[in-house]
Length: 345
Image 1 (cartoon, rainbow, N blue to C red):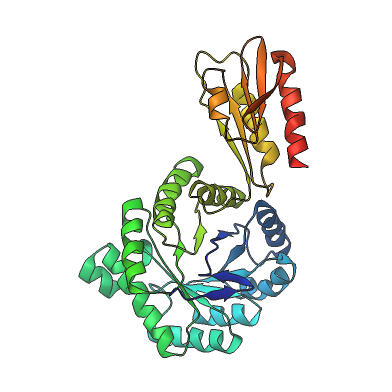
Image 2: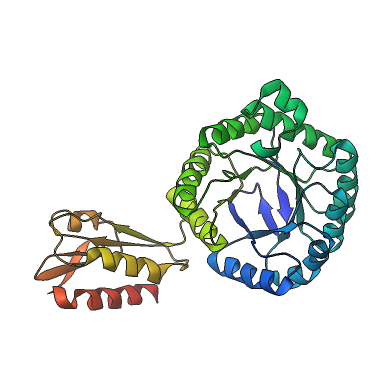
């Protein structure tokens, strides 16, 4: 049975997949960090991570945590001492990297601190910092990632820590999937999914969707972070969309739309974009269809709460799969958006 780990009130391993992101502001600038965190929260983020590079970053967590409105995770590299400072400042969880935290002595220091403060720790291995002995034996591989992570898990366990989350990320999608599949067979701790260094927005969303989605559809994973070289709010939107595409989040307005073709004689593409923007962030189970023409439109919209299919002279507006209105194309968008607002109310 999957273990459960609580991060500031958010349960990992309980069935619901938590969405994470990470701030890009300098953590010691608490005002800018909080402003970004509030944007992330509004977008649907459940847990936020902040980088701790120095003492000022660690100490700023107290002010950030007081206003964040969600659990705050301290991301630690190289310095167990900074991990301790971050925990003492109120971090809800810390993340350590097996390849650079300082071996058993460093991990023991971290373990004593998180145990005393009753907070969890994530052992986050990635291909950029695999421990030297595993790299020598296995090269940059799934075996090296998993071995490195689990050795550090074992050290934490020896020092009395059992609230642990594990991740094994790579920038390669096939390697990421292989590593998590191997890890899932060897541990029952909650797993944090992600494709590390996935790239800029366009390719990063594709790689993350394939990697994270493939694992979620296999029942692997308890929390996700989409890594993008972009505004972190876009990470949250992408993560939400991955969960929805995998059928793991039903409380949203699904917009289905056709790619359009030469038969399309009204601005269905523009309407679809405007509808999508209107319903973003609304937690209500609805399905809306914006179809380009009447060839397949009415059929595709049969299982939708609201749909539109159009032509040069008129558009059909359908509700619950039935044709409710036939309106002039020039007036169709206004009528359709009015019907949408009625549903949203």
